[in-house]
Length: 201
Length: 201
DNA sequence: GTTAATTTTAACCAAATGGTTAAGTTTGCA
DNA sequence: TGCAAACTTAACCATTTGGTTAAAATTAAC
Figure 1 (cartoon, rainbow over the protein chains, first blue to last red):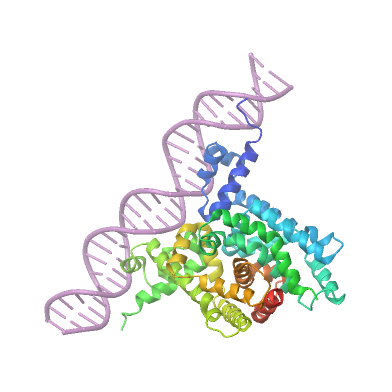
Figure 2: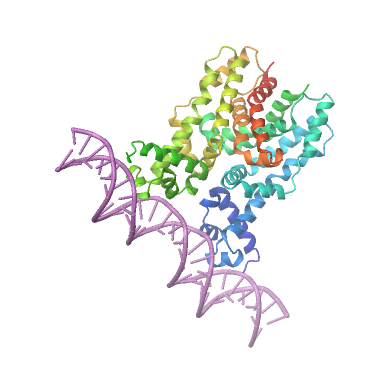
């Protein structure tokens, strides 16, 4: 059986790798074909253009990136426990997909509108989150802080270290790549500890 | 006087804009020539290749990005005042150069080694910083925290909101671009308040 | 006014790249 | 067995793009 039913899927995987590493401008259709073990003709037989393929991939990346954002935060009992769980799970996810943040931020800066539309199309809604934060403020659980500022703080502390991984490894951790692994492992608890200390009344 | 002595400088400015907005892969030599009001032949008369020009520009961007990093942090009396001053000045600088973070992180992900070498070549040394943080811990000023974690936290909270500007504006601030200005203005003090609360004993 | 540096014009080149085409081969399946 | 879908080969095309070249025009400076 030479025919693989999963050729289409294999192409998506290869395209994901290529786009994730090189970005839209840097990615090459030939490289995607090579990675998938096929030729360019077959690649276009399945996906009509680079742009169409990219749309699928960046959408996938964003949908991987986002659902985790709303996860634990919503369904928990205690505000602080919810925050801890969310950050732990989110950084854990990013450790397993370390190039997604760089991929998405690169494309944000390449074509902000396109990416913003995909964010919007994902159905992401931060209102429940802002309300939960406001409630925590009103309940006297945490200091008076703008929900938007807090949300951006949480995302910044979780995501940015992946975007700047080469710099952190090279400058802050003296080129010790194992130290980076340990560093991010530590952050799974350190970031929430830091944030809770910052906001807890 | 049709001849402009500052043609070379004009090219650098145009190149900075083009590379900053489009990145290395997206930038076009023709676009740089157009912005500088000259032709492609003259552009190559001054700078022999796209790569050579890019090297100058990214170096400039990094050197703008970096010195501010070590500024107030070192030369202040009080640890907390130093932290406040640094963050205020740094976010203020980024408000005036909002596309530099996106530019640099994009190129970090395009070519990590190249950018890392430029960071190293800049002479940036975080040791004084880590020592200052360790001293603050030992003096009982702040909680026991890894200097590296704290440094990454400070940078993340300051820089990431610029990298993700379109998303923050579009998703968190409901497309209100003025709100973003205000949001970042607020952060100049909010970030240090947040951090100091997080670490102060 | 001569000279050297600066600038333009305009054609040109080579390589890379996304995409197409056509003809033929292989395979799954009815 | 035969047909349709999956796949390969290989040539080909158009466009983009970084870069070059040569000749002529303009300007500064001496």
